[in-house]
Amino acid sequence: MSRRSGILEFAVLGLLRESPMHGYELRKRLNTSLGVFRAFSYGSLYPCLKTLLQRGWLSEEHEPSTPPPESERTDREARSASLTGRRAKIVYRLTAAGKEHFEELLSQTGPDAWEDEHFGVRFAFFGQTSRDVRMRVLEGRRSRLEERLAKMRASLARTRERLDAYTLELQRHGMESVEREVRWLTELIESERTGRDRESGSDPELPPRRQGDAGSGRRPGDGTPPDPSVDTA
Image 1 (cartoon, rainbow, N blue to C red):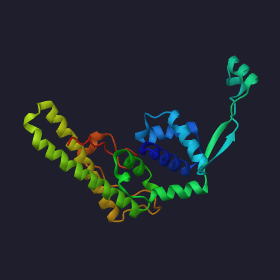
Image 2: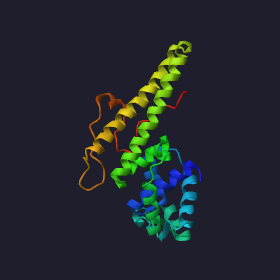
Image 3: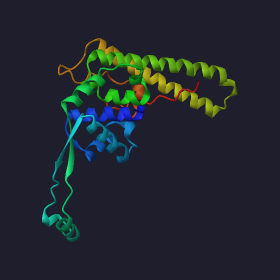
Image 4: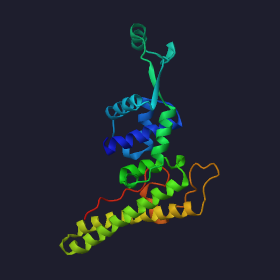
C-alpha cells in the first residue's frame, strides 16, 4: 500500500465513523475538511472504497434516489425519468470490524504520523484520539520539524554568500514557516500537558493564536496545520 492510499483509507474510515455517507458526500468532506485531499478525484476514492468493502471494513446500502417534485422538473427530466428511472444511491457505512481497525490506526504514533501529509489528516481526527496518543504525535511532529529546521539553518549558513537576494528571502520564508509551526505545536503540547481538555473528551481546549500567526489563514483544529517548507538541505 502506498503512503498516499493509506492516508486516504484512514480519512475515509474516520469520516464514516462519524456517520454513513454517499460517495459524493465523502468526496465533499475530503475536499473541504482535509486540505491534503483538495486535488483528488473520484478516480482515487472509488478504488479505495472497493478495497475497504472487500476487507469487510465497510458495508454498502442502496438507497433509492428521490426525484424532484413534478412541478420542479423540466420536460426533458420528466421524459428521462419515465424512460430510464433513477439510479439508486449507495450509502457507505462503517462495520464493527472497520471501527476496530480505525481505532487501531488511531493508536499508532510512529514516524508516519509525523510526516507532512499524514500529520494533517491525523490532526483532523484528534477529537477521536486519546490524550496520550495526541501527545506522542504532537511531540514526534515537533521533533521532526526541529530536525528539519536545524538542517535548513546549516544549509543557509553554508550557501548564504552564493545566494541572490530573492533566493535568500525564499530560504528565510521557509525557515519562518517551520519556526511558526514549531511554536504552534509547543502551545498545543503545553495545553495537553495542563489537561485543559473539554469534559466531553472530544477536542482539547486550544490555546489562543499568536498575533504573528494571524496572516496564515489557518487555526489549530481546522484540519490544515501550517505548511512547512520542503527541506532545502
